[in-house]
Length: 52
Image (cartoon, rainbow, N blue to C red; front, side, top):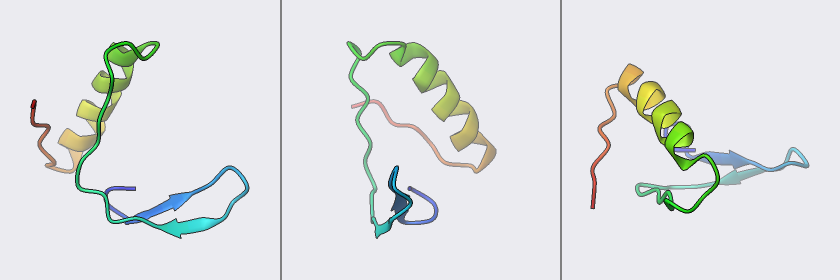
C-alpha cells in the first residue's frame, strides 16, 4: 500500500491509494506483533517509523 500506492481487496480488485500515514491502535489484538512486523519490513526498505 505504501510503496506500490495501491490496495488489493479480498475480492482481488486493485484500488489506487496514496497513503503517507498509517495508524495502529494499541488496543488492536496483537498490535505489538503487527508493529514489530511493520518495523522490520519498513527498515528493509529504509522507511522510518515516527511516533506521534
